[in-house]
Image (cartoon, rainbow, N blue to C red):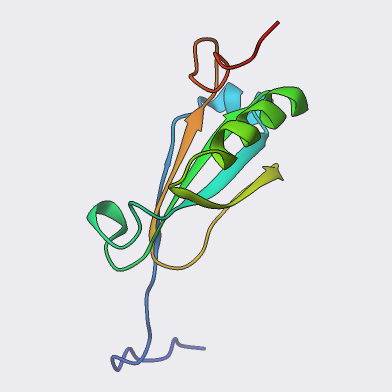
Length: 111
């Protein structure tokens, strides 16, 4: 069975996905705090599409702290926590950052 010819009606939309995690961190940093970046969507690497940012965390507790930090940002919409794999669809750009010691979201935690 062959594939359908591309007569210009098929849209080949792809999310450019950048993941800063190492192979080991993909296994240990499974909690992803995900948001739609309203400022960067539509231009730059997300030209004509949506820009997503995700922060990979190694625990539910850290993810909860990062969630509050991301939710407080005016440029982030649709903030949520995803556990495990996250593969956005459509057209645009997605970047997964690693949350570790010294991350700005953790500096707001008081002991």
